[in-house]
Structures are given as C-alpha cells and as structure tokens.
Image (cartoon, rainbow, N blue to C red; front, side):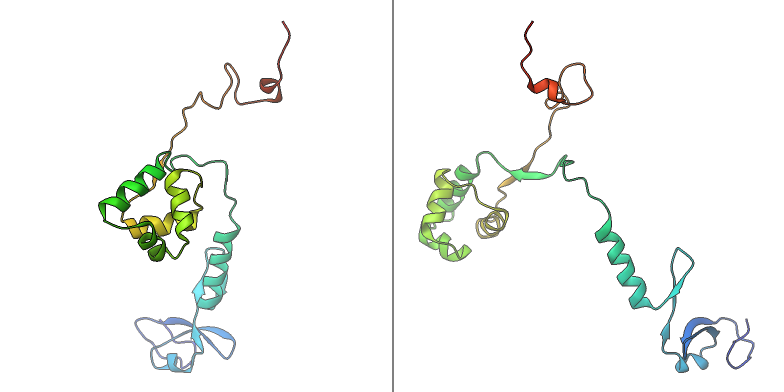
Length: 163
C-alpha cells in the first residue's frame, strides 16, 4: 500500500485525519494525525467520539414497546411475607433494616404488613440489604387478555350486550 502523505510503499496503512483531511498513512506519518477515523455502516468517515455518540443516540431513539412486558420480573405477591421472614432470619429489628436501607422504621413496618407497595428503588434496597429476591417473572397466559374468538380486546368486550 502507498502512504498518501509521504509516498512510501508500506505493508499496511491506517486511516486517520490530518489537518481536516482523511488519509491513509504509514506508521511514521501517523504521528501527524489528529485522531484515527472510523467508518460507519452508512459509509461515512467520522471521528471515533462522534461515531460513538451517534451510536448511543440511535440506541436511545429506538422505539420500545412498553406494553410488551413478557417475562419481566415484577414484585412478588408475597413480598411482605418475604421481607418479614428474611429480616427475622437475619436477626434484624425493624430499626436495623430501616437504617440499612436508609428509610423510616414506619415504612418498613408498612411494607411488611402489606399496607404499602414499595417502589422500584426501595425494592432494590431491600433486596440488597436482605440478600434475597422480592421479584419474580410473571408470564401472562395467551387467553388471559384476549376475548374469545377475537385477535385482541375491543371496546365491545367491555360493553354489556342485551340479548
């Protein structure tokens, strides 16, 4: 290959940016480059930082189906019982657990009594402090959300019909 900067015949070149121009240069001329270039799948030639930022933006901009929660872990129905059993097994009082998760004692009592459903942050704190899982995967049955004989629920499924 030929170095586009010095004209030397070399076994391999590197694609870099020199003074704003994209060139294939040898190892000796590489020291004059401002940075290495990256070819993106669209064929553009960009600086690595620009390519990385564009890739991150594309990931953020992808549409996500919020209704498709198949197999995602959700708070278990018996979360209050799990918290109480694990706290007692570790020999902790309500106050000890509250200090460990940086919450009020009354919050811990309400969670254990099932009076309060903890938010995601509190669930993570409790899981970490108690070294247990309060979530489980919930899979909906195919027929659970669908009305009989239809592709999905419609307004007609909610209306009482006179026969």
